[in-house]
Length: 190
Image (cartoon, rainbow, N blue to C red):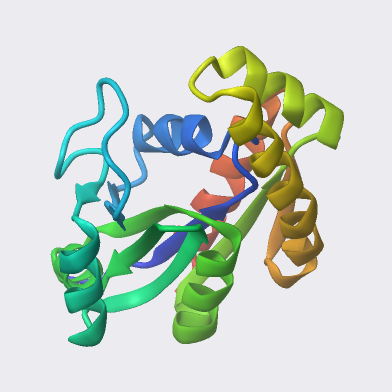
């Protein structure tokens, strides 16, 4: 059995990366989703082991000290996210292509570790104003959280050139198709 490859999708919050990942998972690409761990509590409708591995802060820190993470970051004060090495290896060894929905710094770090075995894609909003509108329309965060996310997004956009490809998510269907084409080409490479 051939070992799988890694597909990294990163973007500022609200850029549409999760929607694009869900689209990719619905296509015939032999993809498996790498479930991230987080120290934040679940949002409505999120399930442990499906959307994230929800770990309390102490457990997250212990796993970190044990070297269990491929990458991690304290994304917001008191809220960390990370990718468990065991999750990635389990999927790769099963011959699956592993797709990541990770923050920008995490995406850069995974690409550095896996180099040519990984395809890194940066999903970019058409503008910061459009991003703010999307976050407001998502209706999951209060205004203060939205402004924190917008400020963070402005910094994250500076990382775009470190990715293999930048996909501007202006029209969602177009962004999905372009992403699928890039992923398909990468998977088919020997």
